[in-house]
Amino acid sequence: MRIIVCAKQVPDTNEITINPETGTLVRDGVPSILNNDDANALEQALQIKDEIPDTEVIVITMGPPQAKEMLQECLAMGADEAILLSDRALGGSDTWATSNALAAGIRKIGAYDLIFAGRQAIDGDTAQVGPQIAEKLQVPQVTYVKEFSLEKDGSVVVKRALEDGYEKLRVKLPCVLTAIKELNTPRYMSVPGILKAAKADIKVWSADDIGVDKETVGLKASPTNVFRSFTPKPKGKGITVEGDTPKEQAANLLEDLRKKHII
Ligand SMILES: Cc1cc2nc3c(=O)[nH]c(=O)nc-3n(C[C@H](O)[C@H](O)[C@H](O)COP(=O)(O)OP(=O)(O)OC[C@H]3O[C@@H](n4cnc5c(N)ncnc54)[C@H](O)[C@@H]3O)c2cc1C
Image (tube, rainbow, N blue to C red; front, side, top):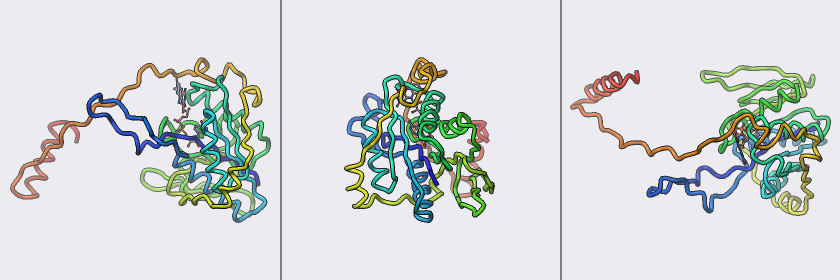
């Protein structure tokens, strides 16, 4: 089997703090990491490789040259190959343009059985790229995958998380699946993996290499534009609900919520 995993290097948003004086984000020294859901996507691909040893796992990312570090981490976890799409022509892409570039990169890789992506990237937070790649490649998709099994007839059966339960779906290959953290626990990098990754040849492909129409990638081609970004105001102080007994406190809380039209 050939499995392609879309992975994104993101700033570790747990490490981002707000400067209390200026109210702006403190980004200095914030480490870049493999996006959490993408680690689950890669882990699922590696579990298939554990079961079916001639499986090839290829990780693809679009990003700046430093995204190579994240790709090395993927190789050290057990991926066979890593590809970086990096080109000024791709910079400033919104999700539509990002998925155009990734779909073109995947077409260049050639035949595949499965594509895994994360549900969502913790920086852009849109959860749009996976489904858009599926659309552009004209293959079925299942998002929010929390359980996965490969069937003998070559299809996959997945459980897709919903707000109040799950859907069980059978999908024909090839397809795109987006992973959530409930799917598995990503493995650590291994020492032989780290040594292999240090010597690995990470392919870097430009917009020309993937043959993507330049009118469909980059800032100018992006249908959306970020006009302003700002740090949200800190939340106001909490309030203590008064009352002599828990019952009275609950009644006061309800009244307050009703007054504010929250319930
Ligand atoms: C006008 C505009 C300009 C922008 N300019 C820039 C910019 O200059 N630089 C910049 O870094 N971002 C820029 N962005 C953000 C960029 O759109 C997003 O980083 C990108 O489209 C991914 O969207 P997301 O982070 O919401 O990913 P989601 O849709 O939440 O990601 C879902 C999954 O898709 C896959 N995926 C997403 N992005 C990638 C990727 N790059 N490579 C591989 N897999 C991926 C991962 O598996 C991920 O888990 C810009 C956005 C807009 C709207």
